[in-house]
Length: 316
Image (cartoon, rainbow, N blue to C red):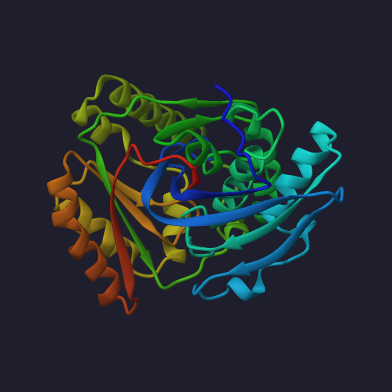
């Protein structure tokens, strides 16, 4: 269903943070969380261009983000939208960053999704969320170097999504499923995290990972906690990236000791996520997970959220 355009030439939207990969679904799975968010304010202008008028935040490192639209994830997404629709008008964009950079929470994706949802409301004929997906992929590629939808898809649809190169699919999520996401004061660039994955994997590991992915997806569909626990085990990516995140092993151990269904690296890291079979379990585990990062010498913030997190939306 198409979204209704606003009556003015200005629209604002937020995009939530997300957990990419969900361990077993590298570049395929992700889910939105109710936590940090980016906000985009987009103005329709007569000039046939996309420009970024400002980027604000109290988050460290935001001042380094490019104002040149082509080099910015949000700007590039709006350029792709303009070019594909052959629009005669342009967009002026202001961003308020709330999702930390290099956090594994989809910071680059949140900017382009928030911008697209706001700009879409200013179109004479707004597009569906599915139609916005290719533009979000192009925006995200500016930061990651490749087109993968495990962050932008859950931001556009909410909840858990399966994201391929040409489609995004919302998956069933039981209401009792909650997560803890802990973000330490560390920065891990996506390109660096991807570099450790270049060596080939043995076929036996790929088969075992496929088994876990199948169990995980079936567990979601059946709302089966036991099957989710069996499936939520990453044999491919986590072992190679864990050493890049000081304190990771201790944080994961704390989550599993608190009866997490599973825990792993959120996106490219350094954030760590864990899934729980109830909100009470998640809330009880969060302080211990945060404390494990503190013991490793890093302050951290913990977010407790339904796994069926919110999608990006317009702001009043």
